[in-house]
Image (cartoon, rainbow, N blue to C red):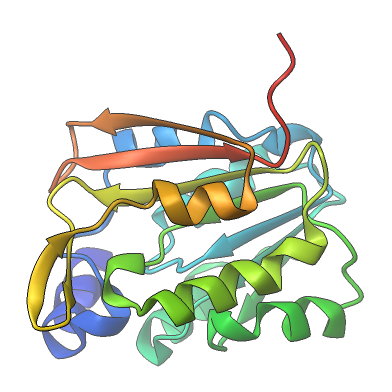
Length: 201
């Protein structure tokens, strides 16, 4: 059912879906593996879609933890509400640019892990910075963020198409940024793993 829902929404509103198919289990595993989810008290997911990564996060999250999920697409949001019944899950149907307001509203003062599936290539530089500026007050030395980007991602800027590199953006907010390619996904994707401070050796 989720593939049918996903395909329908992708055709109607690619700007909010930013994907052609749900994330594969291989991409989900690569996104979650660097995150210390089992020790997290607060986890945040940005852009859940039909919940492939949401389900994987909940599998590893401690019983007393919270998972704050931002999903702006109303059909995906309703799908998540109907298919996930977990007291740890907090669904937020708001623009992620309002992340600071939404987290403070829920008395959250830090986040341990952040998993982002946002289609950053479809946003302006101003929008991207607004999101990460809003997230920055909640980052701690041990916070880890993962973000994926399709290998083929391009951005339309000043009337021309450019290949988008997320590294300059991510390095504004994170000292350590590492990436790898997950080929077993449609389409293949980079997974960026970001730490506010360098990882200890």
